[in-house]
Amino acid sequence: MEMHADVDGCSVPLAVLLKRELCNQKVERPDILFGEANKSKKGEDFTLLVPRCHRTPGGSGGGENAGDDDTISVFAIFDGHNGSAAAIYTRENLISSVLAAIPPNLTSEEWKAALPRALVAGFVKTDKDFQGKAARSGTTVTFVIIDGWVVTVASVGDSRCILESAEGSIYFLSADHRLDANEEEVERVTASGGEVGRINIAGGAGIGPLRCWPGGLCLSRSIGDIDVGEFIVPVPHVKQVKLSNAGGRLVIASDGVWDALHFQEALNYTRGLPAEAAANRIVKEAVTSKGLRDDTTCIVVDILPPEKLSPPLKRPGKGVIKALFRRRPSDEMSEDQMDRGCLETDVVEEIYEEGSAMLARRLNINYPEGNMFKLHDCAVCQLEMKPGEGTSVHGNMPKHSRVDPWGGPFLCSSCQLKKEAMEGKLHSRNSQSAVQPVPK
Ligand SMILES: [Zn+2]
Image: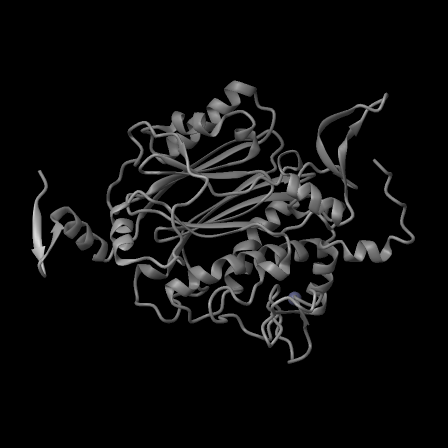
């Protein structure tokens, strides 16, 4: 039987009124519990675990009330290859480059909106700075920032982050930049002057995974890899979602785990275990099933309603993969839809997703609304430039495309060179003297 209450003559179910009440309450920030586990084979996997740090270096950002609201959590895995220098350098420097790319004095909402663009700037700056050291090696990066109930994941390479909501739905929050698994990336690499193929053995048969040449890397994106072509770019896939206040569990792991375990298997092993034990179990099961063939690293992060100090996922999950999200905040919603949205507390809401490798698209001036970024700072390295000094990121776009009147954002000359190299433009400029690629 349904109970009803009368409001202004129209009948509203009591359940709806109660849900509205809950929606209007200020939802507290979640508790974050985490654990990590690692079995090392080559010693090239690194993790970063920062349960609390300030959004703005040195303390409370502007426009905020004092208190918890200024803190975020950061968790990351760096899976190095050809040595560990790139992984270590990125672990030490990436977070500060990302935070430095966000203008000061933003509100909490503005800060979250500015984060995806800042992640792109921070990844490219870190790659460029590391290449300046002329050290070999490269690294994957799966970089997770948790701000309240909003989770933002930036990724290059093939370490993965999955989310299981407290309601049992599963979401992939990272991209897979393995050439074998990503046709779009094969096209991009080829168009930028790289060659993609398998290793040829005698007789002409190709073996092993798809690799790109020069270099022979199986990944299409990474940080570092100066000895591989510039078409292996550091521009991350970025996905931002908002959890319901029932929370969820994140599993971040290197390919040592995902080559051995299906994501559903990994989640099933962790059912009912606290974060630390869950991470240990995943690594143990991965190594048991395939042997220790690669560095095998896992971080488990539980995002929990405050003071509910137990894992949120005691019952078996629905095993539902939510590739599509049901609604976007930008869609106009009627009051009726808002009510239903409020009732659908199990919906993980997609706020942002973009994976393009093109800086012109990723440093978009129309995003976020208004321009929060300084007009005359280099959009990648934040170098302050005089008006008229930088090159517009849209410099090479056709004239008919829609560009803001002031034409920015701008890049300093060094970041402009980096952009051209990533797009294969320096390659084609020099290709007259270079060896022509072997036709397939
Ligand atoms: Zn710059």
